[in-house]
Length: 303
Image (cartoon, rainbow, N blue to C red; front, side, top):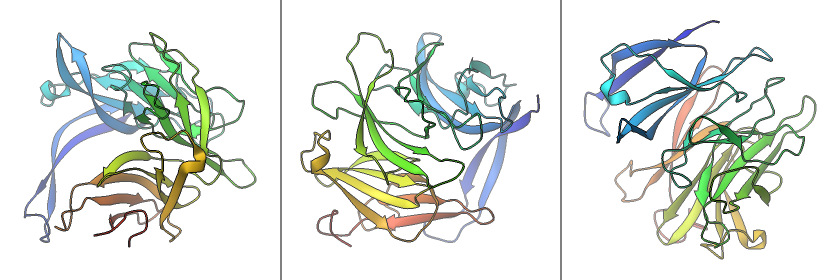
């Protein structure tokens, strides 16, 4: 098995924001893992107190090979010691970025999975609370893969549901991308699968989804890598989002960029409005793009 170093660094800004500055990374620690991909900090219960764990997903591009999810518990106390990650699971194919699922069960996680490679392109959303990885998406025999999950009571029944984007990319032909939600069945313990409903059956997001409240309106920011779309959804019936006839979408940018990840962040330019940060993938020269929210008026129509 080939191992790669996982490096922990801190970036220090030498000058205040909005002034040209040089960022100097500082090495904190390093340890080896097989094919590390994504890392996430999650709240966990360790030794009778709440702490932060570093959870790392590792995926191997070789078909039929094993993939792994590792955990470094109580990472804050291990930054200057020799780190030995513990295995959470090796039963998930191509685990992507880990998502905290405290809204379902405290100290739990969702592992979205799957990607383009043969034998690794049939993914799911796996719920993990202890050691078992429970698939939540019904198996329709198609090869969908997932990168993110969001949480919201979509139909007003008092139970937290899951919203996600997904993609099916055939060897020949056009990709299909969808925005879907999974209805929480309300069982005392989390079991799968959950019933799936479509919000947008084609032309939806396939990477990231993020709910946000802008002024008095709740919106869902989402992006598609394969369809090259940056989208904002809202519902006329908010807080209910289960009626697709009342769901609307605005395309934030029409430039065909391969959007990778999005993050609604703090005010970047001093206009007292949050801004949308987006990473753009490129084989040679990726970029980080900031979008200003409309400075006044209705975010659904303003420029």
